[in-house]
Amino acid sequence: MTANDAGEVGERLAAWLEGLGLADQLAEAGLPTFTRDADGTATWTDPATGEPMTSEQLEGLDALLHNDGTDPAHAVPVALVMLARKARVRAELVASHTHTYETLATLRGTTVNATRFAVHKAAADHALLVIADEGRTLVPAFQLGADGALRAELAPVIRPLLAAGMDPWNAWAWLTQPAGLLGGAVPEQAAADPEEADLVAHAACRLAERAATEPDGQGG
Image 1: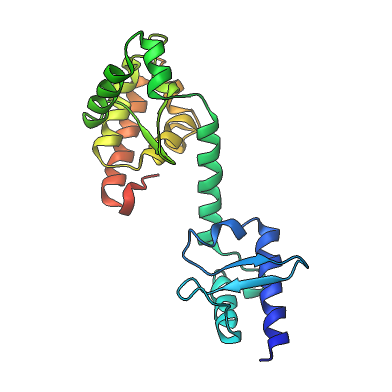
Image 2: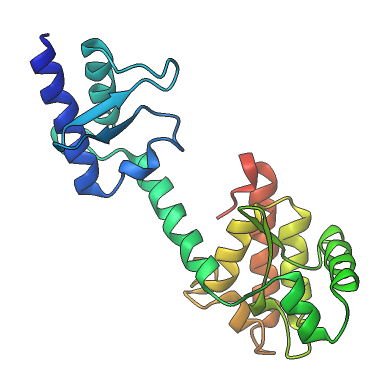
């Protein structure tokens, strides 16, 4: 393969992934990444060496990315699609109402130090969902009442998920989005209905059992 042929493969791969909206997921997946120069030409980099990829490497990457499905011409790299969905969900969650130690302290009418201690203790007891995000500690507000305390109806829902080691991001997503185990109801909302509370708690326990047996606490 000539350098010109390699450039065509690299450009085709880059345009394909950009069209699918998956280019930003390459690094997280541990795959080679590309940048575009001032002329818009895609240059692929080998993550192991930091060097431009060879023709053979680009051919191998092409085959790998088109490996899903029965028709390589129309294949979609499922792993990258899943990472993209995960990134979108996380962005939506972070954009929702959350508390820092400072804002929660204000809500509770106590000091930041006291709030930090209380949050750490509740998290250690699997009683409070706490998220680490780019150096920040976030407490999703959906689980709190007007006084900043955990909503009592959510205790039997949150505790089994966290005790099972479920990834906090996955727990957050499940609790605040329509859930298949509940016929499309949103768990944190359904838990507030006395007629649905037991069903939500049961669904959480089932999900916790699944998370405990899956890698990285993925659960649903």
